[in-house]
Image (cartoon, rainbow, N blue to C red; front, side, top):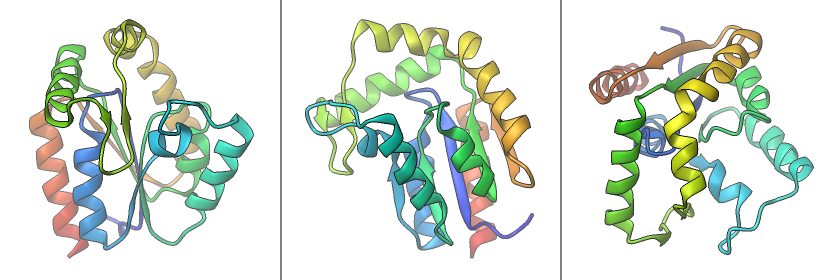
Length: 172
């Protein structure tokens, strides 16, 4: 495995991006950036797309990073600079359970790490249809823009735990 320096973590809401991101960032001694916390303010207002892309260009230019978030429109920015990519392609039921657990843990609102939690019917429909509608787009972007990055496609929580432990071992 090549040296881990820049990790892009992508996947549906509730798939475990933040959990894996926290662990990998700690192993690498770098910060974890949640794209939701960059894109939305604490009142759930969106950042203009050009500003969002420019911020990601700056983040991706750093020597070491872990960035979690989907945002297919700006995914190529992260993929071009990533040394490793973790795509959490988990079943919808698993992701919905993850969202339920997160909601219970944080009681909604803004989390201490800057992520703002909102759940509405549109978000639930997005999660339910992610594997059919979004995952093929993500795979195409991976094929087109991931270059020499090592790409890991994870399809279960068990696989995610195993991969995270393996990546942590290689950073020590």
